[in-house]
Image (cartoon, rainbow, N blue to C red; front, side, top):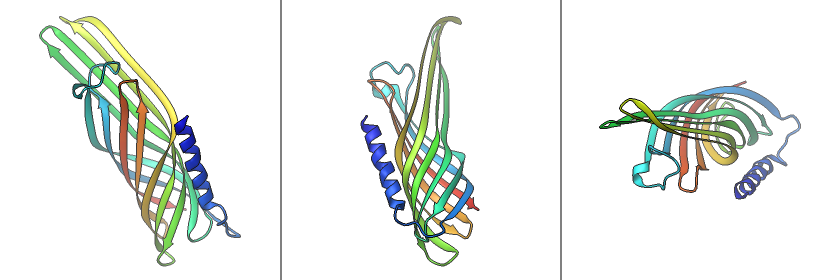
Length: 215
C-alpha cells in the first residue's frame, strides 16, 4: 500500500510539472532509441529462496547489455514537456552445476524487467537546435522472477525445487541529456526493489545510456 501511495504522489508531481505550461499549439513528437544498460543486482545464491539469507546465499551481478525504447511526447513550450514510452529494461539468466562426490545440483535463475514510463521533461535551450534537458518520472514495470533447482545422486534424480514471482508496480526514475536537432543523448537511472520472501529482497540498479531520434 505504501508503494502505491508513493507512486500516486510521484505521478501527481509529474502531471503538475506540465500543467499550466501549455502553449496555444503544443508540439507532438515520437521516436525510438537504442542504448547500453549497466545492471548492478543482488540475487539469491544457490540454492533456495526460502532459506535464511546469509552471505553464502547471495551474490552480486554487474554486467552490461543493450536495449531499446519507443516513445512519444508533447512539448508544451520551449522549456516544459511530457514524455511516455515502452522500455524493456533488463533480462538476466544464470545457471550452474555443482558436484559434491556422488551428489550433483543444477541451478537456473531468470529475471526480467520491462514496462512503460511517463515523465516530465524540463529543457534548457542554448540555441534553436541545441540544448539540455532533465527528466523526472515514473517507470511502471513488470518484474518476473523464476528459480529452479534439481538434485541428483549417482546420476539419478533425487529432488527438485522451484519458485516464481511476478509483480507490477511503479517506481520513480530520473534522467539528464542533450539534444541536437532531432537527435538526443541521455543518461537515465532506474531501481527495482522486490520482496521475494520474508528473508530475501531482490535489488537491481540500472544505468541506461542511450541515443535516440525524434520526429
